Length: 195
Length: 366
Image (cartoon, rainbow over all chains, first blue to last red; front, side, top):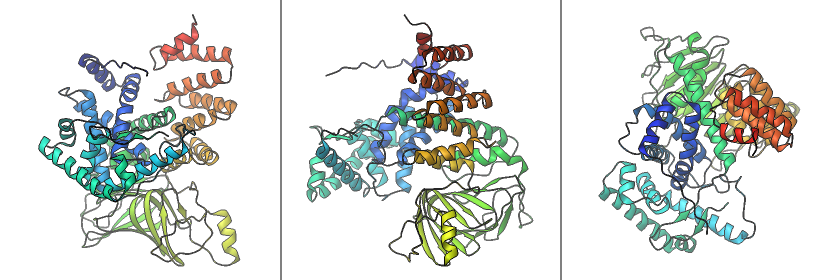
C-alpha cells in the first residue's frame, strides 16, 4: 500500500500565491488551479454525480475564484474559501436543475477502464445511478449537505460552514436525507448495498 | 472508470472516486484561462460602455464574447422613446426593438436571459403581463442564454413561422438567410409548419421540406431531432451531429467543438480550424484546441498549428502552453535535437514559466 505525503501550504505561502495571482502572474494562477483542481472536481462530482455538467461547474468555480480573489481576506484558508464557492455553484445548479436524470458513462469516459472486472464495473455504475437518482428526489439543500458529509467525507461542522447554515440545521438535513434514502433502499437492494 | 469502491464504510460514508484524468484537467484549465482572458478584454470594453444588469448567473461568463468584440459599435434602437439608450430592455409589456448594424454584435438582458444579437439583426422584445418573454426575430440571428423554465415565466423566440419555446438553457435562432436553431446547452421545443421537435444540446434544426426538394435540402442542411414522446413528431431524416453555422457566435461554436472532442474528433478539428481561421477573439483558443487534438494523431500537423499559433498570437495568455506543447510533441515524436532547441527557445522567453523546471532538466540532462 503506497503512502503519499502532501505538504500543506502555510498561510504565508498562500498569501504569496494569492498576491502573485492578483498581480497577473499566470504561472501562479496555473499553480493555484492545479493545486485546487482535484478537490474542487471531487466535491462537485460528489454533489452532482456523473454528468457532463460537472466540467462546466468546475470551470465556473475557478472563474469565480479568479474573478473574486481580490475579495479573499485570508480569514479562512484559501482552500476553504474556494470550497465555499464550489459548493455555492453546485448548490445553485442543483436548485435550478432538480430532477435532471443522471447520465452514466459521460464523465470519465477518458478514464482507463478496468476490463478485468466488467461485472463489478456494471454493478458499481448501477449503484451510482440509483444513488444519484434517489438524491435527485431530495431538496437541493438536503442533497448537498448529505453529499458533502456522506460522500465527500466532510465533518458536520464543515458542511455547515460550506452551505452557510448552523450545525444543527446541517445535521438535520443530513439525517433527513439519509432517512429518505433508506426508505428507497428498502425497496432497492442495489441502493441498500451501497448505503 | 472506478467510480465506486464499495458500499458505505462503518461510519456510514459512501466512497466514490471522482474521475481525475490529466486530459480532462488540462481541458478545463485551458477553458478557464481562455475565459478569463476573454473577460479581461470584456472588462476593458465595459469600462467604455454601460453594463446591463445581469440576473442570470452565467451572464457574466457569456459577456466576454459580444461585449468585447463590438460593444462600442452597437446600435440599439428602443421604440419606447423615453427609454434611456443604451439601457437594457425595459421591464414592461411594451415591445422594444434591438437593431445591430452589419459587422456589429449586441448583448442585452431580458429578465433572466442574456441575449446576443448577431450582425445585421433586428429583434423585437415583448414582455407579457404574466412575465413571459417573446423575442420576434425580423432578420438575422440571436444567441440566447436562458435559465431553465421550471417555475419561471415562458420564454419564446419567433422567427417567421418558426416558434422556439425554451425548456432551458442556451441556443441560437436564426431567421436569415433561412430559419435555423442550434442548441448549445439544455433543451428547446421548436414548433413550425410540419411538426414539433424537442432539441437537446448539440442538435441543430432547419425546416423540413417535402417532396424531392426535401432530399436535396436534407443533404445540405443537417436536420436533427430528438423525439419528444408527448408531442407530434415529424419523421424527417435525422442527423444528430451538431453543425457549425455562420449564425452561431464563435464562442458557441468553440463550445460545441470541445464537446465533440470526445465523440467526433474529425468534426471537432474541422470546427476548431474554421474558428482559428477567423479574426475572432476565439481564434487563439481554437487553434490551441486544434493543436492539442492533432497532437494525438498527426504530430506534423500539430507542430504546424503550434508554429502558426506562436506566430499569430505570440502575446496571448496561452502562448506559453503552446510553446510547451510544441516541446512535448517533438519529444513524443523522438525528435530530440529539435525538442532541445524548442526547450531553449521556451526558456529564453519564459525563464520563470510554468514548465521552467522540467525545461531545465531537459536542456541540461545530468
